[in-house]
Image (tube, rainbow, N blue to C red; front, side, top):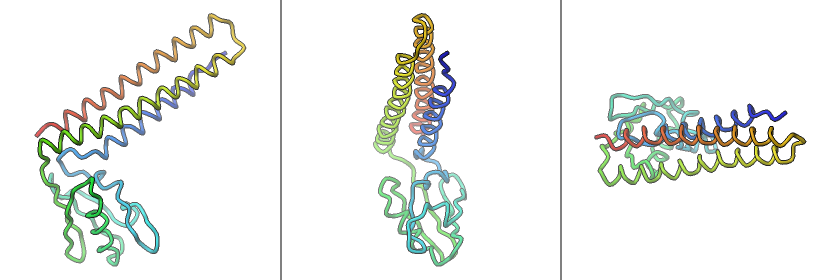
Length: 180
């Protein structure tokens, strides 16, 4: 018998990964996940920012980065400044780093939406890859033809369901980005 549960879990994982990617996309308001992709050189190696500092929101337009080790403050500031996709200019006072989040221009908002739409396509490709894996398993399985057809329909329905989820998540994020 064909079991679609593992493929449902794989598609859920693709949607979860996509959701995580969308959380990193800048919307004009300060959010700790904005700095999730920043790598800081500390202790002789590159580490994610969240392993060397605590990131909090001071208000809607300011992030506070508090290093666990004050010796890493200069490296953290330069790592945030060096990430050109963020376009942020941090300032430190020796204890904490203040990262002002400037308001987005209309042009920058459209650019961000375009980048996010690329991530939508990547997620949909992931969903289609899971669908192809399921179809290959169905074709090679020793099952009656009607069971294979039902399985194919179930997989196609799941593919549509998860593609729609990705589209809806993107539409929500697009509205959030374009809202001033």
